[in-house]
Amino acid sequence: MKILSVGHVTYDTTFETDYFPLENTKNRFHDKEEYIGGPASIAALLLAKWGLEVDIAGVVGNDDYGKKIKKEFTLNHVGVNYLASYDEASTSHSFVLANRSNGSRTIYCYTSSKVHLKPLQLDYDPDIILLDGYEYEASKMLLTNYPHAISVIDAGKDKKEVIELAKMVKYLVCSLEFAEKVTGIKADFTNKSTLGNIFTNMEAMFKNTIVITLEALGCMYRSTDQIKVMPSIKVKTVDSTAAGDIFHGAFVYGLSQKFDFEKTLKFANVAGALSVTRMGGYRSIPTLKEMNSIYEQVK
Image 1 (cartoon, helix red, strand yellow):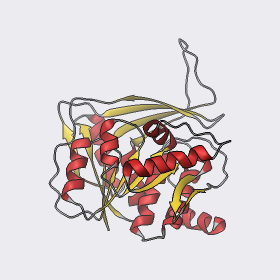
Image 2 (image 1 turned 60 degrees about the horizontal axis):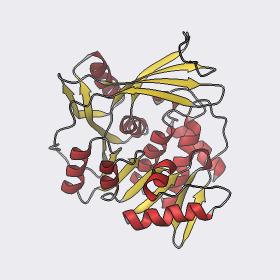
Image 3 (image 1 turned 30 degrees about the vertical axis):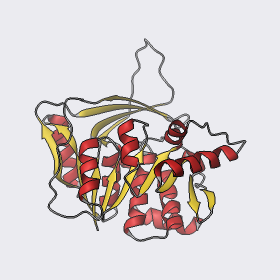
């Protein structure tokens, strides 16, 4: 299958630390990782690592970071024909503080607002289109021009453009924070009826297949007439960077392999959980061999 991943492309610098720095202090970091980041990018890298044919569509600057990104995508077998380089923009750059003591990560992101992806003329019909909501105009055009493609959105921010795209796709896979904000309902895990209310309100608003990710708790979905939670596997969190991006990439992989819906969700849960046990974004993508081994154990 041919997959197109569309959205934010950034260069990430991750600093590993055992504490969160105080304001107005100088801090030295002895470990760092530099690699491609962004939801669409990490998902594309996962799909290529797992042997699928995937292209990335997004924007970088015609600068050193942009050239590094193109080179790394190419080395990792991600197609870059639709990765645009612009002289008038700087490549997006994220600085990530990964706190090893509690597994949290704090991200400072510079994103150029000068340019966005221009309308795309593809030389093939994609079987699956994965969006992260960042490139609104190009994404909307792709959904309109390729209605037969399986479409998935990774919805994290409740911006009006993301909400509009989320109404156009077949699969809306979103964070709990997104679902809370668009429904106006706060989740209370001591009162599970709030989760059901969030889910049914989401269904009424978007009228598509919805998955709500719950981080370490797994994900919420509908199976026939029941709203269920697919639990994640228990792991020790070292760094949660890119866990959601990896979940979405694994979800798309499951669709490409025609897994049944619950197997797809379990596979994505396992991928997201394994990713938080190691540092970094791309570096934390598990191998397909690891995935199959762990999946069989938790089946």
